Image (tube, rainbow, N blue to C red):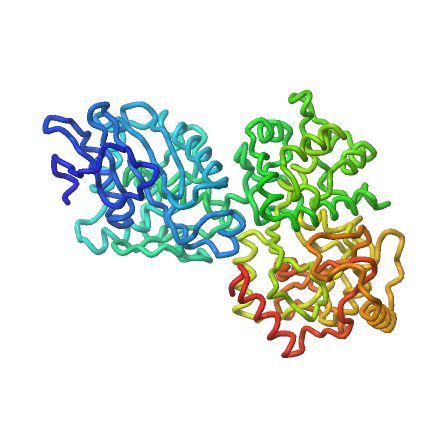
Length: 610
């Protein structure tokens, strides 16, 4: 149907089933004398031209002079593990629903915004974050927007571009997705102004050619170029896209810029995280006090019950890691981050404040957190009441332990790595999308392999929130750096098992023979509990991680001790926990083809895909 015609018709236009519908194409009704602003027609047509016919749908409410514009944002560029961690469906577009005045369009009231995925009914936290971002963007743009202003911008475009269709469309595609510098005095700097000052349109092509990553979105009509999915590669995600192709294209482009880097910005204030080691995989609130208060009052932390119900084993592990760090004599160094928890009796103050650390009070609250096993056996609300009676800060602390985890952890099903000889096996992904993208680029160039990383469980509270970092020659270093600065790994399990048992005063790494004897002893003693136990039974825990590491010349191999000085070249994949002195097989070698085949088999059944 020609959108420039005077009538849009559709039998189902009353909006009764709005929440159940996923609309494609243009829908709506209007009376013969109903006025639609022509700029709205032009902007919708621009979306269809730049993207596709299915990228926009329209529903008119003629009697109240309103129109809903649904813009469909393709997010298939997100990796499978990222979309799973963010709880989004990468196979289904994210819908931005904007409600405008039908007759006034940009001269009317600021549009309301909804963000949703039709099949994603619960826990769409990313939608809340994106709605807040786009609301702020629209409010800022609305101060300067008008139909006449937009028309002027588009006339500039038509006067500058050549009339030949191919060149015009190609350059149109380039100009839409080129970064526009933000001006503090005026938020929209148009490409036509830049072109006039620069005088050479070829500069725009050069800027595009210098980018390291091309857009993954396929456009059937116009070739479109996008930004790298990382502020670290170009810092373009907050730039204001050009307005030359209309407001609808502009807000779609802005949404596309922001989605890949949502984990790099606070979900409350939308400022870049001030975490010491940069962003992690999952979106999170920043450490600024105002954001902590807002995060609490907005109820974003109310997902603890859902987490306990759906990932109880993971919550159990998070609490165990927190306890180990808090009970460590090195807690002033390794218990990082310290909780920011709002006092439930006084929502204007922090009960736990990183600026006023009180480890004794924190220990008291943690001791009052009931075991996850107990929580799964009764009503969560009743369990919460019991915790509140024991200590009013116990449940808020549990909420913080869950919400502050910035890694994606999933308990492995029965298709686990059998040679590790523990039922407590987890998929562990902590790299942000930008780091994962850099890792995969390096992997294509140099290849990769798997190796173990052993670290005491007291260190993992910080690792899950700050990432696996190079601690050599820093206050975090515990074991020395005999082979230089970097992340220490080993293809041999016994070496990493030795490192995992160090801490809490145990600083002598056991020999391989001692580990073999312990392994044989633990496997001949009759087990007092089933190896299939769902939850951790003991506080005496050891753990190691299985990592994927790039096999470039930067990887330094000193026999079976490897040192990787480039943190971007190491990504965690699996995590294994052992109780009461248990250890896995000390003779595992990740370079054994049989072991590699088993690792790849389990990876093939999990979220991570190569």
